[in-house]
Length: 84
Image (cartoon, rainbow, N blue to C red; front, side):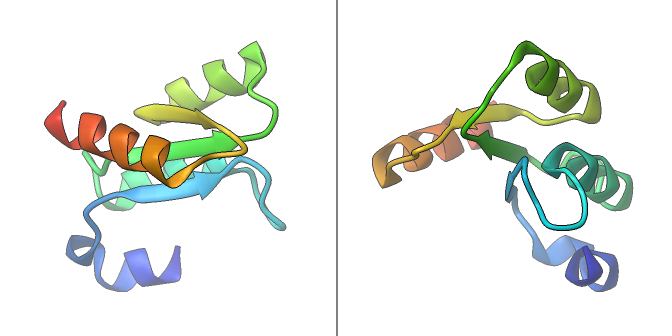
């Protein structure tokens, strides 16, 4: 999250995948929310198990999205997240 560390106010939301090369998306969400509390974080995964969902919610993720993800679904979930 280097860009978030240098300019946290520049970001309105974060969309991340659970499977990242160096860390899990839920961990990235936790780090991002430490830098910018209240940032809407959406997490997507092709395998949303109860464990992944629980871990994501505990890290502060606001919305969970199941892949494959269409642009309409993404737009709707972003809108819901911003309204909340």
